[in-house]
Length: 82
Image 1 (spheres, one colour):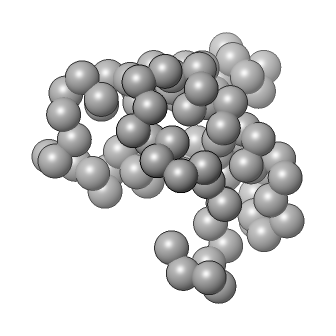
Image 2 (cartoon, rainbow, N blue to C red):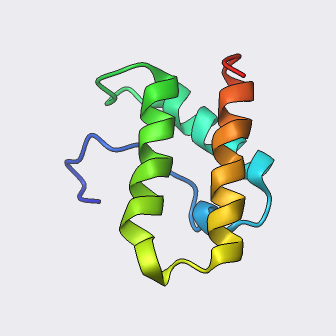
């Protein structure tokens, strides 16, 4: 992302984590503290997760894609949308 982007400031290598709860917690934290988002924290966090999954595409190992898909569920829980 560029320095003028409205994207969230994410922890380094967070999408490489194998812990869906850690990924969700990091995204939630980043979304809640960001002053540059144009939507709700939940929508911002979920958008960043989906953006990463879509951009990684075929280069994303199946095991990591599964972790990221589980992170979506954890993100919903973290925001009380389970």
